Image (tube, rainbow, N blue to C red; front, side, top):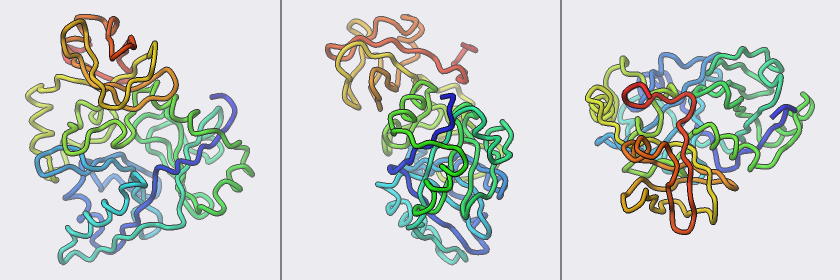
Length: 300
């Protein structure tokens, strides 16, 4: 994208976490270090099952005396209930932010509009909300959590034009970035198979959090056998979860797609053997590519 554009991400929503114990409360639950979160710093993180499998992805930033957690809209109430269940005696409040919308911003000069640098995760207050560089990868552009009724108007006043969802979705897929449960299988997905290490979504020095043991063991024992990666699709777009094969061998599963590109969880053994070509799913042929930011085993 060259012109400055914004896309309203209606499939994402915001939860507000307040109270004097909010930081220590989240610190014991999610995969990233909440001590990094501030008004000028956002992080990417996940909430896992006790067994270390994926439940929710999230972006966390501070606004005033609240943490704003951006997550999937269809599952935001589930996350609110899950967090509330763990409150116990902690001085914490958890509520859906009913009038806050999520926007993706991109284009030349987008970060400069808000005096943000190019570093992933930098954030600033703006128009009653917050804007931050995607903490996973600066090339992914910006995200904004703004009042739902005035957000589009203030973005247009600052030189951003509205763009369709597919503009953002295709760019995300080509970068190899997951989008919640569209790409990570609930209660089965493993963070390091989906790039959370390289995408700044895990802190291995923060101490214990829910699911930490499996995540650490996966890293230090080199147990990653699959990776999420972009695929070019020639033929009908396979449904999410569709099998991908290399000849007679199982090679992976399809995840989200937009147009002729998609994300797929590919077995590294088959990827190395094929160079990513010659993959099939049903009547379609697929070509997989390692994301530029990714580090595969053996330094590939």
